[in-house]
Length: 91
Length: 91
Image 1: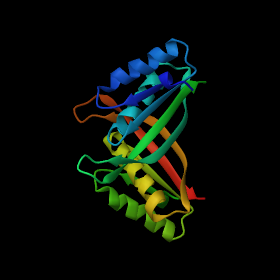
Image 2: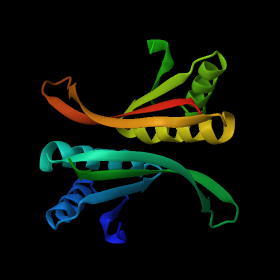
Image 3: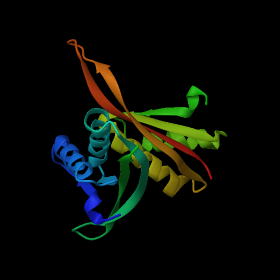
Image 4: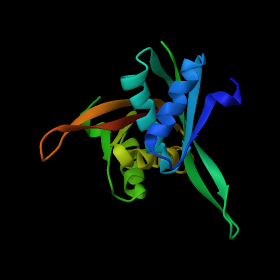
C-alpha cells in the first residue's frame, strides 16, 4: 500500500482525521490505515468508528494490530510507547 | 467465556490491569479480554502490550475489535463513545 494511504493521528480534533480518511476513500483508495501512538490511540479508534458509522457505510475495519515502539528521550535513554494500526477498507 | 475473564480498564494505573490479566492466566485462564471505553482505550492497549512483551511471552493478542456505544447523559440525551475489546490468549 502506498504511504499516502496512511494517516498519522495526533493531537488535532478527531474530525480532521475523519475528513482525511473520508477524502482518501472518495478519491478512490481501497484501504486507508490510521496509525497512532500513546494517548492518541483513543482518538484513532474514535475516527475509525465515526468514519464507518456516519460517513462511509460501505467501509469497515479490516484489521487492528498493536505494537510497542521504543522512543529515544531527549535527555538520553529510551521509553516504550504503544502504537495501533487500524486498517479500513471497503466491504 | 466466563465473565470473570473480562477486565474493564478504567482510570487506575496501567500496572494494576497488567497484574489482573497476568493473575488470570496464571490461575489457568486460556483467554482474557480487556475492555475499555473512551480515553481508557490507550491504557488497555498499553496493558495488553506490557503483558505480552514483559510478563507472559506465551501470550499473544488473538483479536481486537471496536464498537460505538451509546451513553445516557445525566442531564438527558445520549452521547456516543468508542469501545475496544482486546482478546489475549496463549500461543
